[in-house]
Length: 243
Length: 198
Image 1 (cartoon, rainbow over the protein chains, first blue to last red):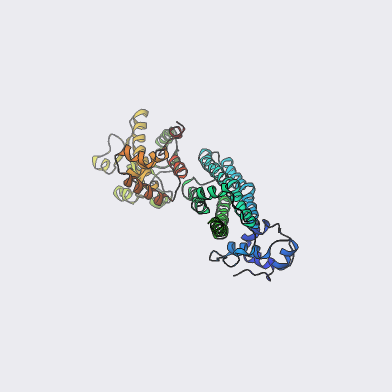
Image 2 (image 1 turned 45 degrees about the vertical axis):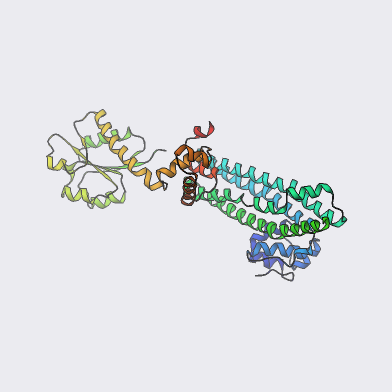
């Protein structure tokens, strides 16, 4: 299903409830009423085209948002990505950590074994935070600078050197592998950790892990398919300006 | 991790039963599931539904053919014959494992722990350990923090071989990262927690 602006947002959520955290990132919360997507976006001053692009990318793995590429500012996109980061670090990951901690509390018999899983997850959390920090403190400011330079038409010497040292293509490469640890944790729980005394805790952990994994996958797709091409185009423009 | 061993005793004499019961209590993880006197109907079925690891049986308690009895007990179970000085040789020979009624406590405990020890060892590796010996060695060294190159040098292998082992380990276990492999190795006692802390 392609999500369009004249659809009722409530119908879309009925169809795919995993979009709820995504609309939250736009400041749209449950209890949003009976409006169409366009109506709700106008009321919340959200760029409708951008909203649809993100929703469709999440909803349909085959969706390729090419034609919408230029219709919104880089800042809008980055603001969204930061909101998503916040959701992962402040909500999702602490939630999962709490659940794993509960697993260690619930089973005196296998406490030390679940503790291994908890340590493993903490390590994942640190790595994830490092990755996000890097994006927010290094990559995004770089993109903002590119945008500013294009608007002003003047290319400072410093930026040229920076572009030679680091291009957005590198970012694409290093972007892959925070996922692998999540994958491992799922298998440790499914295959190798002892059966828990309370199955429902493990089940909830797995639900959350699958959910986080999907969210991160779509997040990475948005970065790779929308952000990266946009920045590549900007880098290209600036290189032409230098010559 | 103590493995639970389920035991069934078939013996008519009250004194002997109580004696065996007391003996089993000396072992950790031993669970005496049931005591029969041998006259029960459908005895074999009753025994097999309990899925015992050990059946301790006094041949005198078996009313039908002893041969049939030993063969009908579930393959997984070790049958131990409770014998005395006047048990005939052809009956003794039915059992791969025996306990002697007249033995002292110390001797009885030794025989029992030997029989059980053999059982534990047979059970452990193949079922839960999908990796070959070589892969285990490679896994161990990786989780101790060695690089592929260092593992290769230590085990006199080419780096290519080490990488093939790693690929196979990941494929078999479904675990990709070194930290994930470390958790696996700790859970399965391939390495010890002290090993990594050093």
